[in-house]
Image 1 (cartoon, rainbow, N blue to C red):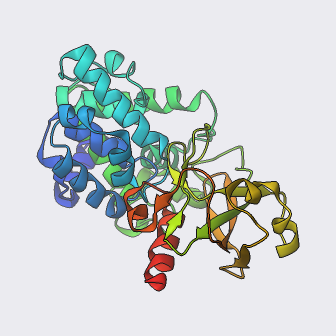
Image 2: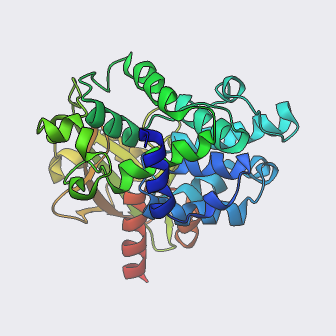
Length: 349
């Protein structure tokens, strides 16, 4: 029995049922693949269902307001995915008459669609023999074949994709791709893989050479940067406050947030009280500044560790464009701010 036949036999028994697996509609496959990038299936599935309910077609997504798209995405992180999703939906409607491109090459021209996503759509929806290489595929192939190629090297994708393509053949490429990813997700998991009942145990290099914990191999470690965020939560007798949209590129672009003072370290009360940004929003002579959370909230991103402190400023009058507190839940905000808003404004009422 060949390796591929064994894999497909395993998949037939262990294949999980997901909403997107019931369809070959490229819109639904594309949507699921974008949502599940950097996201666990258990977390991503409700988002997929919500998007399909609100935007059942690519035309509906293209016609949506970006703020609505970001609000639905709230909590998934990596918000550039949502912005690219919306941008690409518009492009498919305007440039392709709402019909998805059918080839890997054409799909790769779409914003936010890389080698992985284009391979998944073209193979699952259009039977194009394009191998999908994700973290699961890297792990399974590196362990079974004992490959020391660093998976974060520039040449790794080409090398592993070529290997997966040899195993795939030309029959049912979409099923093969899903089987390989499923095997990595359920059997050949990162820690404590189920080697005892693995159909490939006999010839698996990592198992036989006791190298399971060493493969796949990465040459670079992620350097994490510490950042200190001080959010200013203005409170007035007539229930007004400030939210502004982040326009600069980087984390949380196009999401909303309270006025922000970013500092090199944790700020004391005296240090923050002197910051000129406070005077931009109110007359601090009559305002009362207090810290809402004594210990900073730690919020970890892929390359950043945020230390977030919320400060309350009670004041009689605000300067500039304000919003009503009762409308604050309508704005798309980062999940850490959403949790704060839910708690803070519930307690205020």
